[in-house]
Image (cartoon, rainbow, N blue to C red; front, side, top):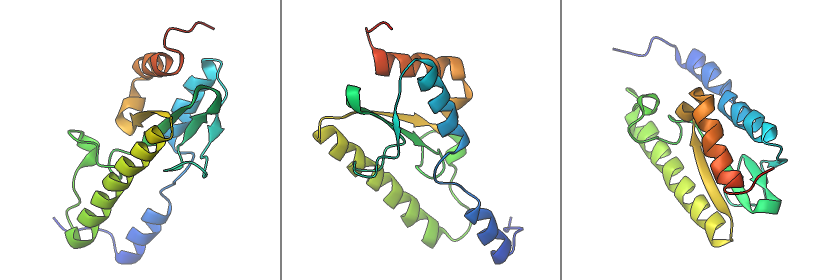
Length: 140
């Protein structure tokens, strides 16, 4: 099956894909805020520019899109069907950059949590995950 979009239409479609304030990121923000916690967004002074940063707790949350960050075993992370010479190296670089950023954050004393786009569909489970990561044994 060939790509039904013209190169111009494909380019316009790709331009509309957001880097920040994505739907999964907003879901995570709402839950963290409901837990009574305050956070900073997209701290550019930290490796990988984490989506949510809780400086007081030294914790960072990275919200990854399943396709762009190649979530293993996820149906949303399917491989592109065309222009493989472009897409495969690009996606591999994303995965490697994620690994390096997370390692640098942890080396600097930050605890990190990666939330995948597909995990934001079940908000109850996500809430439990975030509560356990952010508050652990603490009570409000």
